[in-house]
Image (cartoon, rainbow, N blue to C red; front, side, top):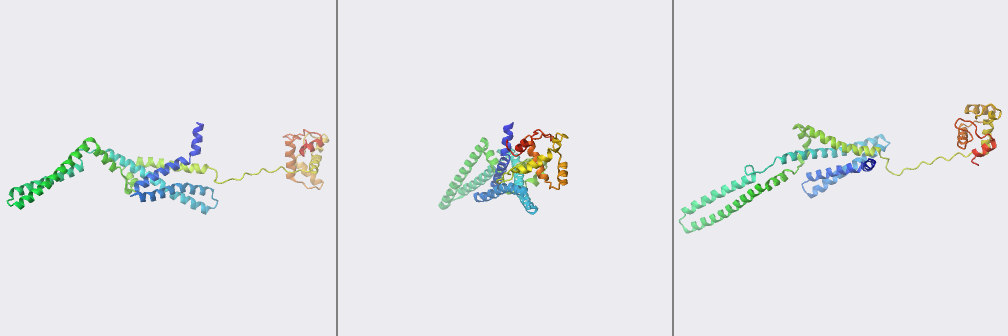
Length: 327
């Protein structure tokens, strides 16, 4: 699973950001009333998604508490926007899914067919009235007018009957149901902004908690990726300190004191730091602790003494050459 770890670590910031941006884009398009408003809404949404993580990152590395607070407040406002839109859009979408799944247009419940039936009934009544008027007409002008009205009514009646036939075909083939479901699936601004309170008050609380956990989880993935990332910008590589330059006089003076006990057969080790300092004080010479540590460290590195301060190179001239870096 090493490849999976590398993939998620590398794209742990980009993937949730893209997901969040896609959710905001779709939501803003659903809220818009036309292409122009869609461009404006989507631009606002993408700006919020992009700048929220940047505000959080600047807050992490900002040293001033005032500016840090401003950055975190800025992040909180923009993150709230993304989280609210994500939860609301998801809740509104699931509600619409429930609604459209229950839509099934039949002859008995189709409002379009009912409207056609009503217009057909009116057209028949009009035609019947015109026929009655025609039967009672005696003058030639009246008869001609009645015949013209009847022809117009009959034409309208045929059109309505054709509409009824086409609608019945749509209902029978299922096209009417599909169209009704497409129309019902469209989200309005009220659907999205009222999604959370409506879902909570209607008992859909598990759905609210589900989408909250999911959307908050995506936001936390972005925060975690930013919090564990290295600060942006080039970092200067620390230069390793150069080894201290030791003079031959310093090395010889140190060896003379440190080899004193060894040369007199009292010990096989160099003198400890405290004894070395006391010896220097008795001779009224200045003791430099840093120089002492440097000499001891150099003597260990070149093998003059071991880690327990035991003298390995017993010849002082040879030891001085090794400490000085001369083999």
